[in-house]
Length: 78
Image (cartoon, rainbow, N blue to C red; front, side):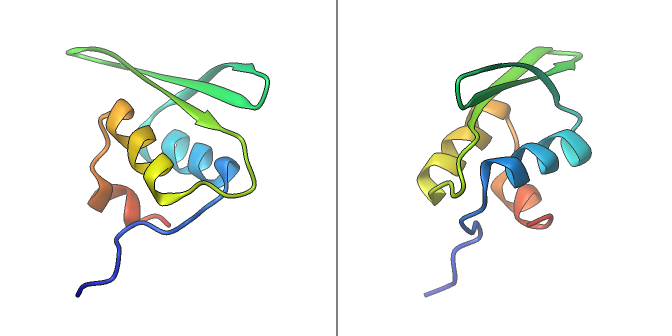
């Protein structure tokens, strides 16, 4: 059995990776949830990251799916 690609990380670390490596920008924050957005030729992509101390792997997968970011690409920066 291969080890999981994604590890548990904090919401802040997730936001930093999405902004620095994938070109997202913080649009606003509602409570502990940070809304990110990126303009692409195909249209805008957006996602919501809970700014918690630890994001579960399933939550992280959902964030990446909304953002249109491949898990393998994201895992390189963890």
